[in-house]
Image 1 (cartoon, rainbow over the protein chains, first blue to last red):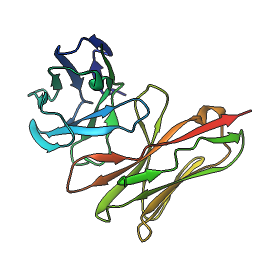
Image 2 (image 1 turned 45 degrees about the vertical axis):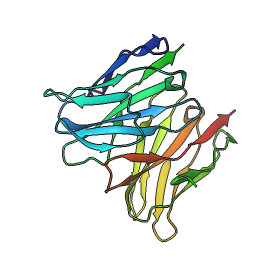
Image 3 (image 1 turned 30 degrees about the vertical axis):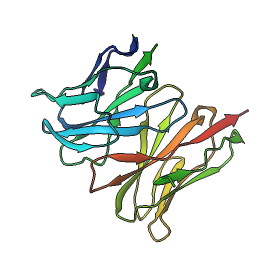
Image 4 (image 1 turned 135 degrees about the horizontal axis):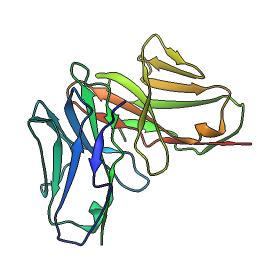
Length: 113
Length: 110
């Protein structure tokens, strides 16, 4: 079965650089979520989109922005990167009519040096 | 206090043992509950949803106690391949997000 696709899988950036993470949800899933997981931490919700509109916002820094496109893929844009942004970034999607069950992609490991 | 709390473990059990994890949540408006399994450096994978009536999937049984605001996961006949971190997750309808516990690490040994 098709899963959530994330790219890139690994990314190394320097402080103050920008990064763009991409997420392609499971086909016919209309809701996308972004989570950040630091070392030894649980996943923390950043932001979500439903039908291309932002539906909820969590602990996302102002330096980050995201959007969902007409084909339902989503991009997380991160600017002025800081060392503390080093983490695993997961995208999850949920099917139409069932936003409760979220299926996670393999994640993007971002390292800021 | 975290909204969702779990004993971090680790739980070290021999193969074939039965092990149980508990998770408590503080928001009484929480609507849906899940157990996820996460292997090291991998994504959380949905293990099972948790219903008020309890549900079972093979060796795994999940229970929800709304009055006491906790959920549990029971694993019977543990296998080496069950070694992972088990995250409980709570969905509150006012926000379309999952709130995770910190996870309980399970190590199954020979």
